[in-house]
Image 1: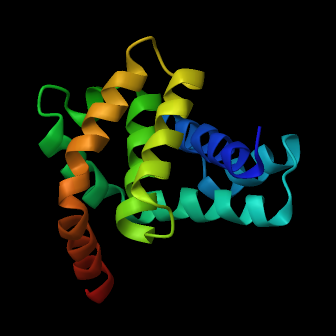
Image 2: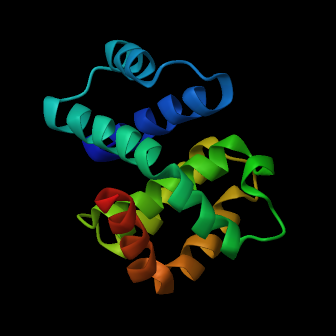
Length: 146
């Protein structure tokens, strides 16, 4: 597995624990990195994903909810909602990952960690959110300016 995919998997595991149990993000992430050493650049990418998702979670969740109204975010499978948050952060907030790459990586994580239907669900929601990329970026800018 490539270093960036391993970094995403580690970030997902950390976000899962933070989301489901409420452990402190710094502690969770450093424990994960101690258990699964990554090259420094990949470890930094994991940190960037985790803290980026946590910072913008309300905005990310609002847009996810708009495109998956039959599944309230708090009732989605914890893995699925964190995969969606990470991918959305990557392509709409951070912008350093091309949309197709972010979605493909999210689908692969859903296949690895989610249920049988997770990959289709993640692909569908993210596909619908691509058209809202600019609106998400604007919503994030509003948070940063306040």
